[in-house]
Amino acid sequence: MRALEDISLTAPAGEITCLLGASGCGKSTLLGLAAGLLRVQQGSIVLGEELLAEPGYNPPPEARPVGLVFQDGALFPHMTLAANVAFGLPRARRGEADGWLAKVGLAGMGRRYPHELSGGQQQRAALARAMAPEPRVLLMDEPFASVDIVLRRSLRRECRILLREAGSTVILVTHDPAEALDIADRIAVMEAGRIVQFGTPPELHGSPATASVGAIFSGAQVIRGARAEEGLDTPFGLWPFASLAGDLPETAELDLLVQADRLVPVADMRGGPVRDVHPMGGRSRVLIGGPEGMTITAETPLTVDPSRRYSVIPDPESVRAFPRD
Image 1 (cartoon, rainbow, N blue to C red):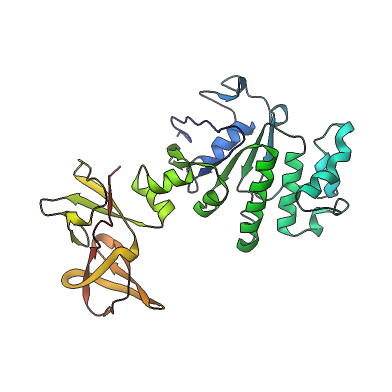
Image 2: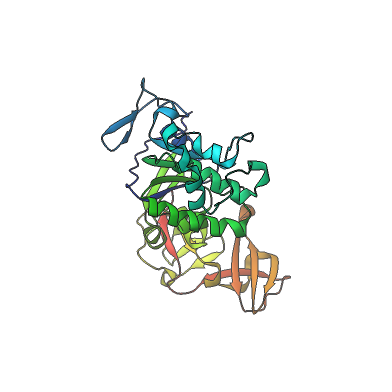
């Protein structure tokens, strides 16, 4: 079984590139190959004009001009923060450790041990340790996942500023689209060992290559559909061609991307049952069932009777259609 298939990626110098995807899609494998934690079996990894790895040539991490930051920080528990940061520095530069701690907001904390810090402080120290040797590339694997969500937002924005000021080329792995949008200059969306789209956040949001990419960045839902003479045939009713935004693909089988607040539930004996109604101030989030366990969500100001059946009609020019994979 292949973990990666037909991967080609260039991370621009001085930018933050995110590898985004669900668990098992291959993003951490790709990072591990670049770091030297895994052996390259096919293809090559190049940094500028320098060959980093290829089949038969796989230098270990310490022999590569890369820094590593992991989810748990991986600080040495028996060393002070200053000693942790100085660990990868030549003897002549070990006095720089306190300066690097100050850059990540840990000034005066060099004598503390990792267990004396909060999770966010530990990640800052891990970042200082990785950046201190001034590697040409910094590789980060879910670096903020162990930090609470409020601190996570501020920490990644502070890290973005710090990394940009340092001019570092960064490759960061995450499964969180909000994190990718918050920190990345470019995002590579991965599915099943492949990169399905690579671009800037505005490109991915405005021109998704697939319905699944569009759903990731817009919060929309993907509904199966098919071309019909009268419109788009879906499990939740016939949607008129006027509901389309953009072109209709030539393929018969479609994936339809639509926002919940652009859908109108219509009482219809041929429709599906109401599975849930959740009040949300002046609107309600309504979950309507379809065949084979399918569901669709509509957010509407209309009153919905849970005892009745409903079809769903989209607003004009609210649906984007993609060829089904």
